[in-house]
Length: 228
Image (cartoon, rainbow, N blue to C red):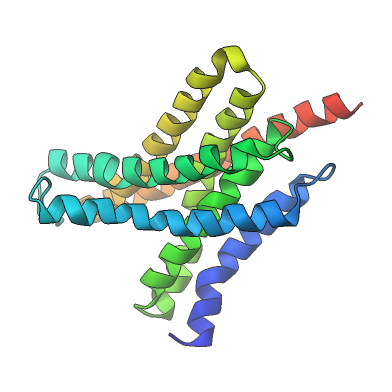
């Protein structure tokens, strides 16, 4: 892999992480904790080898776009979205959630994005081995998509930590929303209908970005009220 392709693969990750970090204008998270969350997020990608093991055991089949709509739907939502989002959640809940620096709802979004960008960054490097075109395309699609999934999860995980009586419910909602957005995004990409594929994935991404920005704005408003 050339240096240019590597930069193209990682630049969107750096830009998204920076965007989220500067949104946290007061009481920012320790760089050390963010870096560790990012690294653990990148390592969580190896949870997808569960899919490989299941295929080897013949418990799931090998996917191709000639399959039925139902099979594509199950593959997108269960074998991809659920496995990947659970992998990210385990890192977010197992490490980031327990940090002392995680002391306000907005931190759920910050840490969730860091974990997700670690995952997306390593994934993007693997895919970008196909060439610079793939790296550039994913910079505007897959990487931002992972960020929107992370904001959905992080928004509710942030609420969960500071609402003990609803903690389990909020965490469940966060994971489910991330899986739903991820599942629909992948489902449209895997669809046999080329026009529908492009439009569906694009609409899912745009909706995810709009809702993510609103979630960020809402948590920041809560934070600013607490600081005054």
